[in-house]
Length: 204
Image 1 (cartoon, helix red, strand yellow):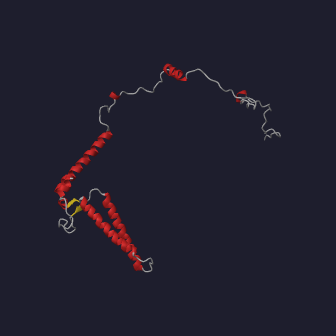
Image 2: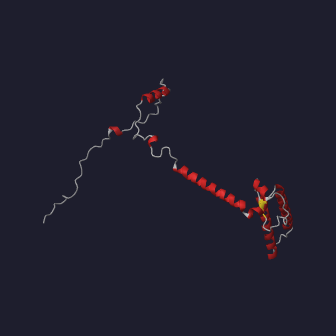
Image 3: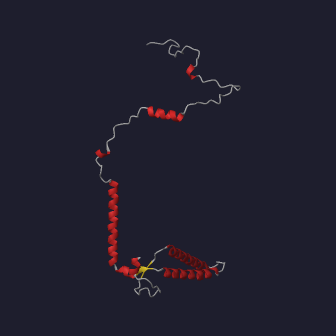
């Protein structure tokens, strides 16, 4: 068995030295209050000409690996893939449009449908407006007290009808072309609509 002497296992401190700051890390002194900055320095150098001469005399920059010529690429002279995709989509849309046009020409549905004339459109709007004024007059004549369920229900019903008429008038006013369909089969006689036949409407 071995025993260590007292204080032999403790670390030994390095020898103390005077700290000296390296000269390269020393910052310049702060200018004094009495010192004035140098002002008014000018130069006769033409920087435009100097920069142009430097650019002309500078050696050319080396690019990376030499690029392959366009004529040597595999896809040179071929239609890009995205253009072929667009052409296929346009061709499919054109085929679908032609098929729909051919089917609609023989469909008996088109014989019962025609374009609404401008005069009929104005007449329809005038009728809706007249109906809205009558309904609005009845709505304004309602009592302020809504003490019964019947009064509340009548008020809500008239409000819904007024909103429906306003939407219908706005929709008809914003649409340039409106088609009507003869679902009764009386050539629109029951609703008082007359005008162009389906062939004339299709010609538009």
